[in-house]
Length: 244
Image (cartoon, rainbow, N blue to C red; front, side, top):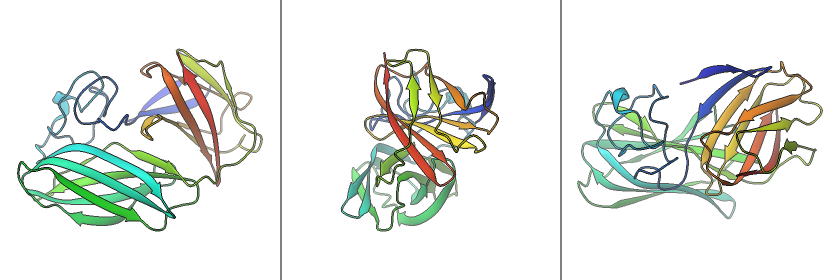
């Protein structure tokens, strides 16, 4: 699932999820068709950038998703998802991460297994993390086969106010990120988030950097406004990114 690209630093790039219509087909939604080795099923329709590669299908999972959303409600985070079909589905495990890389189990909801009927699920994380919260679902069937949904991110706004320089703006094929002082020796996680809260791209950079500048490729990103969230140690930095 990972590949190493050398730009003058060690950079690991991981493609991630896109907008809320993640399971229905269309450019840039869901997972790339030819770059994933995760357990895959036929719950996605396929297309340019959506679903998993048909060549990577190893199991046939019994759930058709309609959407998966996350939003802040009061002091908690509400997760909502809908299925249009469930056959032999067992459960949905909710997982959360502070950086979009390392996920932990939160809770589990039992699937209804209601056949070709639309079913809506709700779960509230009553103790979210200060700062960024990344969520995904692990859908498990009765045989133990499973698949992960794309990731959703919400923030409770504990963001550092230190300088984060991104150039050029607007960006096209790549963008340069000048990290704040203090992160020279830190490994950092860089997430590019779309306006719907979907994790579009993710980069992990080692502490070996030239002038503390990171070059990020933007090829596969559609035109629009995005948010760059950088996790370095216990600090989170954020800024906007315009892609044309």
